[in-house]
Image (tube, rainbow, N blue to C red; front, side):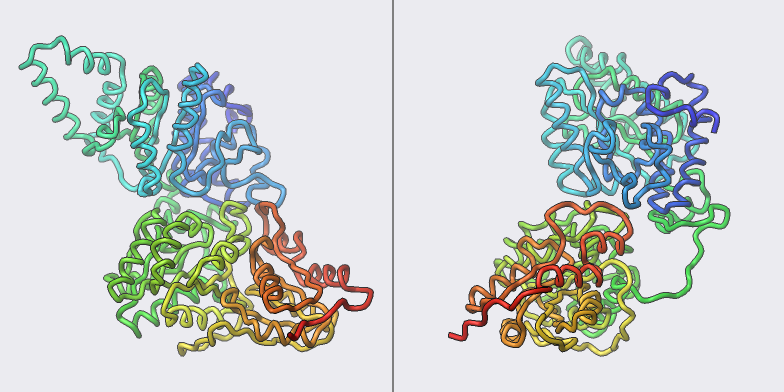
Length: 622
């Protein structure tokens, strides 16, 4: 690591000779593999952007020039070159550096990302701000081909293409295709030519100077040449100067092209082709497996672990296949999260009823609404944090029309190493306020399956939230059991204190209850709430406590408080849940403990609040 160990800021990269950049890329790729194998994290995408990262920091004057990375999980090389090499061992751990760009982590992280397709909008805003302030800085958006499937990316392109004299560069990092060797050299030559000053000037001057027949011939040659070696470019119709595609691992192509683009005015679009997992054969062969990795030995690769508890995602995937075999009306929809949402087997078994709509959550929800209008039974498998992106469609297109759509909300609650951007902390609050919605929270694997069936059979919109990872190890019945709508259950009987637990908080609430002899109710439904059970618990206990793995403000505890007010129930109520702040990345169990949502923390909060004194009044039975 002779070169890399002396790089603590991009200015040091810019001092290197061009001939040193390829050895630097080799060192950086080796360091990445070694580092991520020890911490876990995103590997394939980061191995694919090593040369592009070096080239950007070499050509542009960062941090004065702004780089916005989309989605941001491919920024490990960027972090290493911007002074965080010695912190990489803390990646995605509590108190360590994030796996995504964060403005409060480094001045080189110009925009916080982690959800896709935001980069062009943000970079355009930065470019316009620079123009307004008279600042000559450049703004660069690096966006993946997957992120380009989202409507927001095209909204930004549509807006950017009519802006004049802005220094905006959009780089499409295309890692789903390859450049065939026979045309590689020609691609490089044409990309450099098309980004050069002479080419740009000739295009503009030619329009007014060249005689008609010659001009027409020049136009036809240009279009023909582009058509031979580059994809048909709709981006030019958006008002961008399209350049590429070029090999994103060839620094001798990247650097001259970026240097030429830097001299051009107006919005520029550079198409770069990279390979996920580049330089590590195992990741190249299986980029999905090495997308997000645990700790592993690079010499051996990722080995299958010992069979463990079934995950909630697997519970959903198995239920989806079982229900699809039972009901031909079922249609499964995912916004580009086939593996993450557990739909691989469903796609294999029911390809005609499987729809991956790309990173387009808004479309996914309204597409489901259209299917429901025609009597089909759509199931939208979506992370809690990503459903936030389709909130208007959820209200306007599904709930307002009371359409029969089932939402399987994976990653509800804290999600560990991915941190605040991916945590599903708000779904109970943002869903329960919508008319016609049914909202359920699963406390174990079998209950998750029952809730999925209950939501599927409900004639209207229903959401089932479940956590990331494994449950408590509950046995799963194969039959399609259901739960009576809006009913909870008593899990433990005690005295004085009644804990109303939702979803994943049932297990730690039972631990806490054992220490203080409290009653525990598994409420199961956030909406409709089991008001009859609430009244019973209020009559039989002195104190009420709600516990949820979600935001307290507007969440399940707030639903209980509202029901108490409506029913005239006057009893001391303690609401436990996630505080009014964004919870950082780290081990999920550690994070839950830090906010008092483990068994010991729940017990301590109850004792602190109700440990002494007589109970305050009573239930109004009027």
